[in-house]
Length: 198
Ligand SMILES: [Zn+2]
Image (cartoon, rainbow, N blue to C red):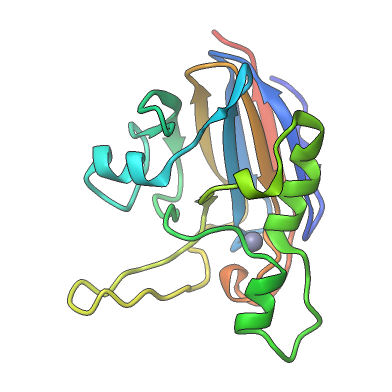
């Protein structure tokens, strides 16, 4: 088993994930969101797609056994384990503008968007290429009648995790989310681990 790496609170990182490797995203303290992006390592025009994925899954609640598809309808990641069962794939990464919109009285933060843009810049990903992220552990219930979205604290507990297997060679962006409502009002680190293909 590989070493566990920490993403400090309100920050982000990017790294390669090879075809067949697994990425384990861990919530070490509980109630902390991690935004995940994936790009084809050989062609960053191919990118993770919320719209394709939700269409093919026929649900907005993705968990073990679901595939995360690219904009070209190819599987990028498969969820192979999940101890939480509640994640979000509707909302874009939090950003300066999110803070201005929802938290005008708080000091703004560049958020997951700014953290992802900085981490992915060495891989040639410009900020305008950043799509809807797969938001690990984010709890966004939808009222079935009105369609109203709520952002509630994650239901994840300390040590909960989700495991993805790469279906192609990928560049991954991953954060410890910076938005108050998504994380139960406090900011915690995220841990991750990469394990080789078995
Ligand atoms: Zn965020």
